Amino acid sequence: MENSDISKNLLKGFKGTYNELICQDDFSTDGHPLPNRQDQQQVSLGMLSALLLVVDIGLGVQYSKVSEKYGPLYQNLTHISSELEHLRATHSNMIHAKEEALTVLQKELQKVNKTSGQLGSAKHTGMELQRQVESLQGQKMALQSSVNEFVESCGRCLPGWKLLNSVCYYFPLSNSIPLKTWDRSRDSCIKKGADLAIINSEEKQEFINKAIQALRYSSGSWHLTGFWIGLKEEEDKEGTWAWLDGTKLTQGYWADGEPNDDMNNEDCAAIYSKNHPKASWDAMKTWNDAPCRYALKWICEMKAKAA
Ligand code: MMA
Ligand code: CA
Image (cartoon, rainbow, N blue to C red; front, side):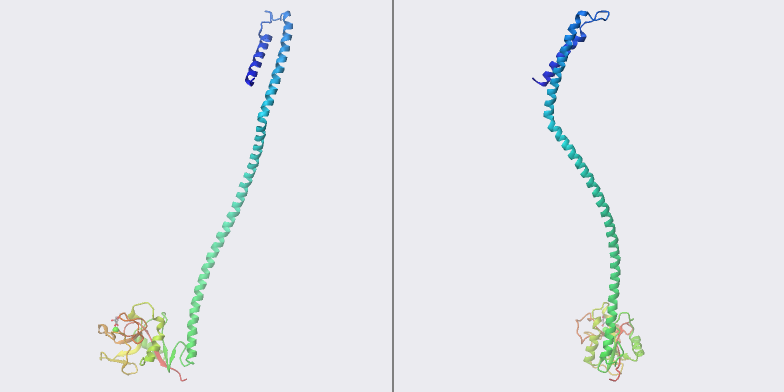
């Protein structure tokens, strides 16, 4: 029999008994029970008790069936809910740990930022020092070479001058020395007890060329990169060149196409370390005639002290 059928029958029986007990017209009109009904009522009560016992047993059976069916499910549910509780605890622990790690990370990041700032300024200082070191190295090299020259010349030339045979030469190579016209260049040499250089031999031409090679690749217009020498056109004698010692020019080391007396205004001679614009480099062709008012570098010479 199905559970629902059992319930329906029980309910039917209960209703019948109840009707018998309560709903039947067992009372007289003045409210007193009729004496011949008493036994019947006792019987009915007994039946009702039996019925209730049956209902109770039925419910007990039902309960054991239900608990048999749903007991394992309930156990599972208990297990799952304890698992859930455990997971919740683990989750909140993890969140807490994550927050702590985040705080540590932020502190470390601040440290890194600070360190990288310090590194930047240290780098800047380092670069500045590097520049100073390079500049000092340059100065040291210049001093060293002037000492070397002095030693090489056995003290016969002033420091910074170069000796060839018995003549000392001065080359204002540094770009910090201002350029001068031919006349002012000569004045500057005379003040040092010297004069503009005379290049009257191949040996001197080669020696002087070599000395000014440091400026071979210097920038600037070609015609302004020369060095004045002690060679000038004679007054009113166009085309006649004479050295400052009064001797006439016999062998010139002119660049191709020079001297050209450009604009009829070029009476002074200069030697160049850079290529002539119209010719390739040739150590024996490095002179040009230029206007004496041009501001150029220059070369001085003086007799060396006795050996
Ligand atoms: C040219 C050339 C030279 C001359 C200079 C003057 C660039 O070279 O004609 O012979 O002396 O100009 O600036
Ligand atoms: Ca010229």
